[in-house]
Length: 446
Image 1 (cartoon, rainbow, N blue to C red):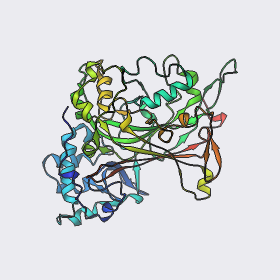
Image 2: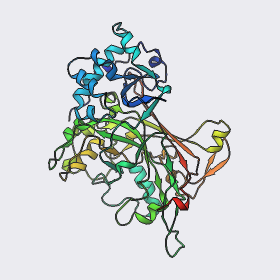
Image 3: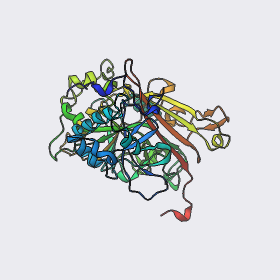
């Protein structure tokens, strides 16, 4: 696996003639150019793929004549209502498009501005849709801090199970439960059993939680029966989005033994509409976090010197809460946590390589979640399960003095992500948000 290459598209001095892209704190400067799928709000126009630049989205296929060679083919693929066609072309196509977009949108370029301007739409005036037709969904458990914190609640003397430090643990979820930021999230029904009850009851979940995660989208597929070598894993990764794996902890605690998560996880998983490409993230790749003394070395199929040197990612993810009362009073959201993917125990390449190590193929549009991204400090805990110690210590909403052990109906959870490194322009991931709705009434349940 080659180390990520820094190129002209990452130049911190680049500016765009789209002035909003040059503003401090902008998520989408010219160094980012993330993909999304959109349509104009209130119209019946077909969805298509666009690229974020400042507070605008560029309808790429509308100006396809401005591109050449492989970039032209990639621009034509952006006429589709999802990113899958572009993703299947491989990272070389996305890179070619990115490089020509960077030149066309650069402040130093005077050509074709009129044509490009006509293809720009204010992000505030479009509907952002699910960017990828998700083929399969796998959620990992890559944060040793989260695994330890969660395990300690149930197994105080042995929080980590023996396999954790040998393999990237995961479960296979439901692709059709993936929904774009802002889409409906409804409290699920399920089998709940309190410790003092002789049998479970079927009722709405009471212990609803969020999980701060990063989602990885697969571009180029692999062949059935041919594991993806760790050294080549990043060749199959198209990009990343913020991800919230909503979780019903009371359903989960009753059902997860012996076969793991099921209905507690399949009712909703929210993703940001924006997909940040692997190339845009090259400046923010870092060494993997050092393993604790005495930890086993990764097995051979999970060990590569380059992956250890540059397989990590320096991405801060902030989680915020805004209750219904806070919205009613027009109060800002309260920060719940600020964690960083740099602390993950397993790299994204290791996750992908292990996923295919038994010969299972990956498909274009597969989505893989990192698992809850938590750090070692209280401020970096990526779920209410950890923040409230399993509901034992209530969180106080400072602006309203409301108490939360788990989410209540009307609560909105908001994620924001940002990459920063000295000498490079910071880039953002947009937002991933969802508001919890009440459970369906008894008459609406199966």
